[in-house]
Image (cartoon, one colour):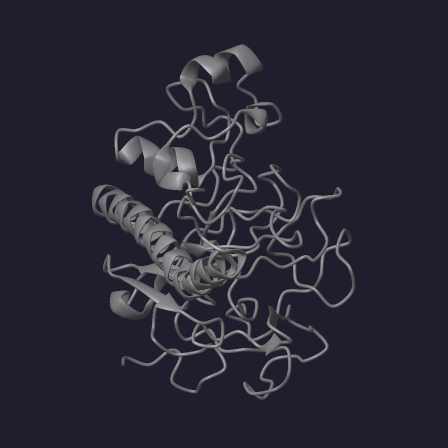
Length: 312
């Protein structure tokens, strides 16, 4: 008499496999969402620390730091010439932006230390696969309003300064300090250490700064200013890389996740649009490719608002 061993039939195996596949299809979005939530939480923690460093610098110096020290005579304690804001904020927090030994090995001039990767986790957004470039990393600084030390000729202090840091911020809770930034590269990179507002800052004379000779027509002399393959668009907006939102820290230290539209950008097909300087001040603030700077100016008002220079 033959004995038969119990086993699954082919139909039963197919049913089990189908059930497992269905469960995976149901659970995978939840797992991915949880993973993205964890990445966003870490990013917010980093931005909160950067905001704290900015507050400490302001309290110590009674002004906001430049996006980079322009004067070639400015050298930090590790020998870095014209250090960028990451070094300035890192020094305030007691944590160097880059490995000092690697800096010394590479050379500390402003043309060589940028090749050394960032070596401080507060500058790394886990949503980006490569955060390590001090020029093309994860976070950008609202430099146009808080710390623009750039000159018409880069590094030449005899030429006019394009813009000046604000003397007084009237509304810290509605003034952006740092945020997830895109840079002038697509999909990311190209001088993302700078963070451009929806439209370029208007001078006190009431006109938008004229384009510099190195620019494509229609773009103001801010944002990414280097030439090279990493610059595709001369505009470095916030980047909505966390479930369609950008993480932002304000000058009072609180962090929010906002859409590009929330931040004032003009968005076409999901892409923040650079300013078109054929629209001159005082253009209609709702005009295409202008945007609204109310979260950037330090006053709570857009520059095109009649209330820009009034007390909120």
